[in-house]
Length: 456
Image (cartoon, rainbow, N blue to C red):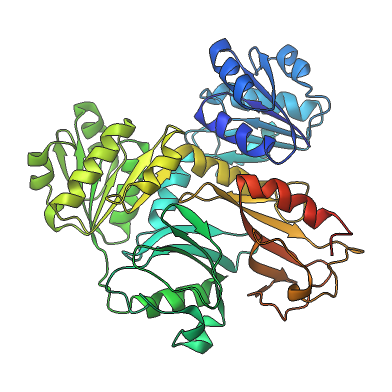
């Protein structure tokens, strides 16, 4: 697929890295030569220096042959104009990065498609959604959603006092429940493991649990039945993410306190927030401020300030002071692999990676030319969805007879809308969508296997 990415910031670089590794023809357009040089040295993509909101630059990038434009620069107006130009030249899909919805009005019937935009992406809103998804339980680390809306995968941590610590999977006490879900992967000591019946769950394991939404939730409820509701939240940073998160939580009945060092941001947030909320002016790395905010007794501490290092440090302090669960937001790509290894931080979300996953979902995975469905936050691995086509030698074969390589982690199978947890006796059928987990390296091997017809 011919793909043009407008913008070589963190979002654009993440997209370029993800898409070029999936064998697409990627071109990156940006005005900054040094940024493009860095991308050119590290990724197998073409770079064009220029204003991506001009016809000249987009034509140099190959807009007349492009199927997809990802307008993800930091300038909303440029992104919108680039999508209009791409639409004029016949690009099938145009995805536009925005900071808010203020350019459009559903009430007045002025929606993105009027300007040729297929989908919009607002990374800050998507990051808030990701944070909200892990506030249900203390053990929840990450949630991933598939093309099938009835299916999901939740990463959770095995606690020292958990009733599943030390259990061998084939000896799992709730046989009916365990047969309805898939223990798809385990991260242990920084390595991705493929569980089998003899796998013993250990304290501190991070387990990826896949299945239908109801069955995954039922298993999580069984694993942590006595966990109290998480209701008190302290948020550091009245940023777009912090402010939106606070308002969402207040509307759901959470008790929320906020820390912000910028007086203007404090005032702006108080003006926009209709609910009563305590906001403390000060640094989130100041122990006195954290103490006044009640971090020592709060259920959740979330740091959303603009500085990544301050976010990480404030989370470590909050955890030491007694916060039950701490969540950090980061922006730099370098922290994607660092934060999951920091044991003092329960969960972390990188805005660039969150936005990449939103884009991947918009691209119609599993049935189109792009098979990547999501990038995991807890480990450098992908979720792929592959469709079994007519004539494939996979058809009518039991999984145990398919000779899949050891690195292939089959998480779920989607068949005519049904969510199926795979086992060796399951027969693969035409049009099945097979969801797999693979590392960056293994993906290069696994992808072609699903496409070949002679590997069995």
